[in-house]
Amino acid sequence: MGKAIKTLAARALLAGLIALSSALPAAAQALIRDAEIERTLRRISDPIFRAAGLNPSSVNLYIIQNRELNAFVAGGQNIFIHTGLITKLETMPELQAVIAHETGHIIGGHLNRKLDMMRGTATVTGLATILAVAAAAATGSGDAAAAAMAGSQQVMQRNLLANNRAQEAAADQASLRIMTAAGIDASAALKVQDLFRGQEILSMRRADPYAQTHPMSSDRIRYMENGVANQPVMPPPDPDLVYWHKRMQAKFNGFLLHPNTALKRVPRGDTGEFATLTRAIAYHRLPDAAKSMAAIDALIDARPDDAYYHELKGQFLLENGKAAAAVTAYRRALDLAPDTPLIMAGLGRALVALDTRAADTEALGLLETARRKDPGDTVALHNLARAYARTGQMGMASLVTAERYALMTRLRDAHLHATRAAAALPPGSPGARRAQDIITMAERLNSEGRNR
Image (tube, rainbow, N blue to C red):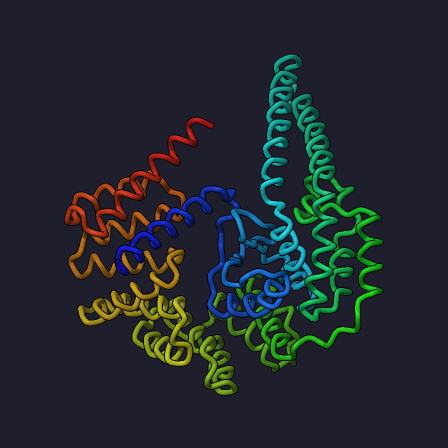
């Protein structure tokens, strides 16, 4: 019975992940996976969820690699945050203010109403497209079509603002209560509002998405100002959390900025930890292996028991073709953080790169454990499929590949590999049933897509 329940739970989770991926626009699917950053965001956010009366484990946080300033709730209790917003907000309480606001939308049940609103907006946009085509046909001018579409964008924005303002005001009220209960200084919310104040009067092309979907108003601003004025004095932020927040920003700067830009932003004489971290990553991406390894080794010398620095060193080594040394670094990271699936997956990837029978066998066990703990890691699934293929288990290799493609919403490829898996695996086996689940879901989602 226990195995059956676990199988059903895994099938339900896969279905949910596929449905969530399918619901997101393609641009929103460049999700960043990083053990350290996910842990940092979780530690920053969990007090907010608890203060809102939510079970933190029931709320999922996702990081989208996008320079635009945005955050939103979608697909249930799932909060999506753009990297642009995380790096733009200067302090941890400002980021917490955004998370508290999005949490306000969750507890206010705004998601379904937002979906209804978006469906209405899509209708307006569709009608405008017809008008644009008609204008172009009547005048023979693309300028007429552009004018019609520009007008429709203004209509769409007015509809979004009219429907959003009530929900935004309600989320503001909830966020003030939540931040106070969590012991967070709500003046940070005013700083976030100041960042976006006036953005809603910009064109749709120029305004940041957060300003478009979170319209400001004088009433909202006055309410927040009054709420902040009446809030009791809050304790200063936890210094340990502030440290991890600053380190997260330094890591993002190293990975997301152009390497030369990242290096220029770090003062030449700054030998502090965060500057060294940004330099280590930027040098790795140039690439300048000698300088990147010197920087990461300096970080490890200062914090020898820091799992995430050993993990980062393993990544540098592996991406420089030094698989054996990478395995050593990843093993140390996993010793320090033994229950971290992304680090397990990193070690598994390094073992697969060794290309030996013993390494493949070890990788298979590690990657299966990582998959059970974190079934949405497509990189781990890619390497797990390689390990299965290397050990002669082609049916399981096809199944895991099908799961990976399903999570990437590449439904045709998912269907193809699931069909291969179903033919290769023993009939009625758990793997064969998972393959059939993917076939059924891919066919259903493809059918729904054609009927829209």
